[in-house]
Image (cartoon, rainbow, N blue to C red; front, side):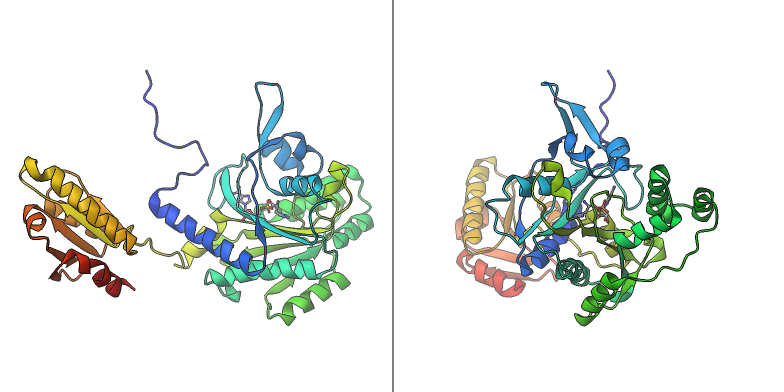
Length: 415
Ligand code: HAM
């Protein structure tokens, strides 16, 4: 029999506690900022009918990157590669009951069969922020403000990132001027979408349009107005990028991405835009919408590169270490330690009890290694006297006291 390997499936994620600590931190920033804008949290299943993605999303994702299978009842099922079709489906389903405008956010894990590399994996958690029911530029401006606030909350400054904006209508005009047929248009969009990952972009573009592609493209009224609106709320690192495309068919107007300016980490941290017609696929009435997605993998890299990730803190304030040479009293000591822990937790102290057979010195070392600030040993003597000696693991200072005074002692030191 082959040995079963311990690696996870390629490109998906195991979160050991130190990683989970960082993950929880990233999510807490997302929750805080979204709540400050009055967005409501929603969720949905990882599984969706495959057809949901086939109408109007991205050819590349549907034909090359989805995890799809047929269930036991013969239905085609896909692990969501993104959240936008799901949220559009949910809105379409209840559009008559829902009070517009609607501000919703979610943090789903999404799956794309991509070549795993720095900043890109096959599973990532993606903050999705979507605003339905407003067709004017205040919606785009709010989405970009939220993205900007998230970056600031993580400790990044304007020089760390740039907000690139474009309008699909500008792109459509370029396509019309170039007089491209349907297949060429598709190719043109694919080239633009991949331009940052290609060495031979200019060459390929020239092959496609029959001459070098070097037009100067001016911002339109929408882009000028949006830039002014963002400048007015102090967002200055906005640039017009006429070749920013975003690879989804559903965008109808403004599109935007936030890019890391670190050349080592030059990738998109957020991407989004206006998508006013996506509900058409459900034959539902048109609902104007603006939204964006931001992945956990890319922001983690950006924060790690700048030393902005938090260090995990200790799992508890106190470790109670049981110790005895007499097996007769082991049960009594464990029970006493457990009761003491229970009382301390009720007073707001986080406690672990080390019931293992390790030597007392090793128990203290283990507590110190996890950063636990205090330890107390409970042995036969402590059980008898009902007094304890608490040790501050960093300074190695010890203090004797009555167990009833321990909670206030620890709380006065950690807060
Ligand atoms: P997207 O540009 O495909 O947009 O993804 C948004 C963000 O998710 C990217 O900027 C990146 O941070 C992250 N991301 C995407 N693919 C991967 C990957 N393979 N590994 C790690 N991170 C990744 C969308 O998905 C749109 N549905 C966003 C949206 C919401 N538009 C409107 N509302």
